[in-house]
Image 1 (tube, chains in turn red, green):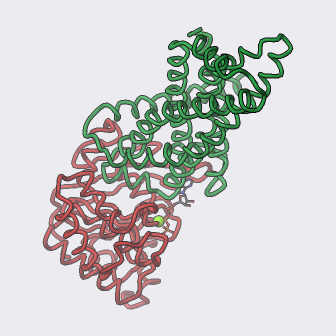
Image 2 (image 1 turned 180 degrees about the horizontal axis):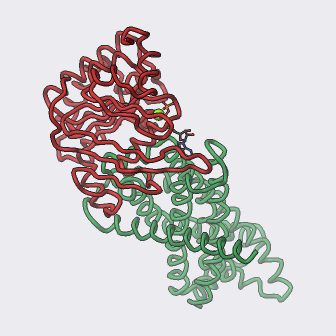
Image 3 (image 1 turned 180 degrees about the vertical axis):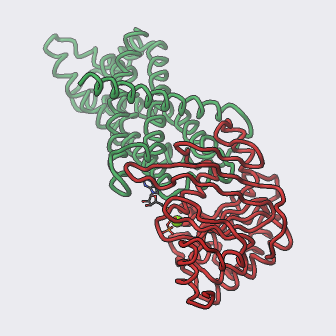
Length: 256
Length: 258
Ligand SMILES: Nc1ncnc2c1ncn2[C@@H]1O[C@H](COP(=O)(O)OP(=O)(O)OP(=O)(O)O)[C@@H](O)[C@H]1O
Ligand SMILES: [Mg+2]
């Protein structure tokens, strides 16, 4: 939570441009995600936050620019190499992206079943403790279509955390959750982060609460990152977009 | 005009290349370990076991109509005795594999395309990719294997029920000599015919899964439509394209093997 000198860079985007049809969504994104730190991306709806995450995951190819994950350019990687890089990732998609023909239990167990050689009882233990942790005991046998929006989010989160990832991508982890639950998620996140010290990229509309979790906050507006700063510096920044954002989310307290 | 034609050609070639790579990746993932039995068993249940009733039904009626048509055509030449041969040959060589493939495409192919298409639409395929789970291995290899196992079996079932259906109509109803029916069939249907039927059904299995699965998998590149409409259009396209390809392929296999 404090400004420390830059350690290693986990993910770096350089001059990323991406146009969908006529719309230039990303107009030269530069962003460094530092290892072991939590970087929060904020910005208005439709500004391209989810698109940035998908670039980092290698799901979308930029029109131009460079994406480095742990110093390797993922745009020139083979599928196999990409898949090796992704072994370190845990991802929560904005829409959840749960496998809707599998039960909640099977959804969360899937990464363990496909990627580890654990026995079924060990898997059961882990899945159930995760469900417990996220306050959803006993929903294992339900199907995603039978869950509420917030429950889907938490199942997606459980699935993302299952393999103790080195880099965690969360696209709006608390949207659709009640205040109490989202606080719990934040607390949970902080405690796991303290234990595993993973790198995290979080997209959130939950400013200013999310600032407590963040080591760095990046604001995207008009297709560019307007600044990637520590929470303190962010709130005092001179950039007009950031000033506006801070004012809108927190009121006038920091002015003057 | 010329540039439009050029662009169109390039797009078609591109699509062809992508779909070709799709098939190669799927086949590669079938070969390399690890092998998982359970997903394949589930797919065999879905593609094969659930189709048995449909196949029994269509097989019987196809055989019956062959018996009827064959009888009246052959009677004009006074050779009703050849009915068994006619029914047997047309079923084993052509109608068995082709109609089985068309029926299963309608039943399971459409479902495969819709399932994969919805997975693409709701980012489930992206989620798989991000978990470093190979979608070719996880989703498609079991489907290919199941189809390759099920198609020949279903085709055999179709042939047998068809022959029985032809027997019932020809012998029991229209009074063809039972011995002549079976003897004629036994003499004229040789192993080559059975091989040909099986080779066809294997090819059709690959074609069906290939087209239906890739239509769903590349849904996002298909400009047919978005969301539910996109899935429904892709499914229609997949079924039509599979059926046409099966018939075209049938012609060429016949031409080569005859
Ligand atoms: N596959 C796509 N095809 C066309 N346009 C797209 C595609 N994906 C995203 N966009 C466009 O890119 C822009 C940014 O989308 P994105 O989903 O990144 O927004 P966001 O910042 O995550 O918004 P929100 O906070 O509402 O989730 C949007 O205007 C959207 O219309
Ligand atoms: Mg988004």
